[in-house]
Length: 288
Ligand code: UDP
Ligand code: MN
Image (cartoon, rainbow, N blue to C red):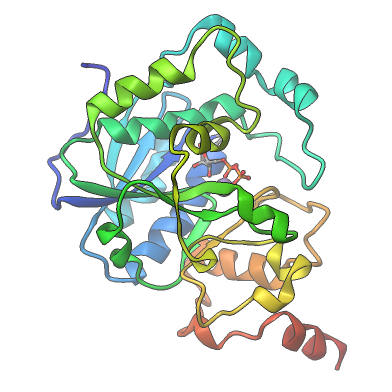
């Protein structure tokens, strides 16, 4: 297969953290993510897959973190498949009732993350969405098998049945990539949550990571007892993004948004995030 991501320099490790950006907004996300990853002193490569929707000027913001940029196209899915998964149609067929998706989120773009299986120069990779922060070193995940992901927990026990595809472990392999494309794009196939629904289907025996490897921001207000700064390794801003101007949960998520801003700008990053106040302490401090 010759359509894999192209890089301008060789890998520096057999392991990599991989993320994806298909437009300027997610480059912003990746800036904070990469800064957070460098802070954990990992020796794995940091790989950013980027599609032609991203301009070189925007990508320049990532250069202080020395990522390997992998330029690639979206997946070569059929026109009928693309039409079925077009933003307006998907939102209508499978409405998002539990949170809001920003206008810059294009469902089909998510699927480009499957290209990490083309990166055979790496033995093991950990994928992380561009809207996440790594707060503690996660290199242990490279020892985990394919395919591990945390449950999609942000509301109730029912959430444990499903995985969240914002963080997962994988072993790049072009044969796997080829098989995935075959399964993905069949007549009438419809993946209501794109890569997430697909990966759950493709790896029915997925292994569960502790929720602290992909702590979803809504846990802060929906399941505050589960919050533990001491244990959170990856914080994931699912639904509304912390750089979105004035979304409807900015008040409720303020401390998490402030934390993301610190990583985005490099100013005011707490020396030790394990000591931050949890949801009830924060509410008490606010009230007093
Ligand atoms: N993504 C992207 N452009 C898009 C949609 C998604 O680059 O238009 C990438 C980005 O890495 C993002 C991930 O795919 O973090 C998944 O999308 P998102 O995080 O918005 O979904 P959520 O976590 O809210 O379900
Ligand atoms: Mn995400």
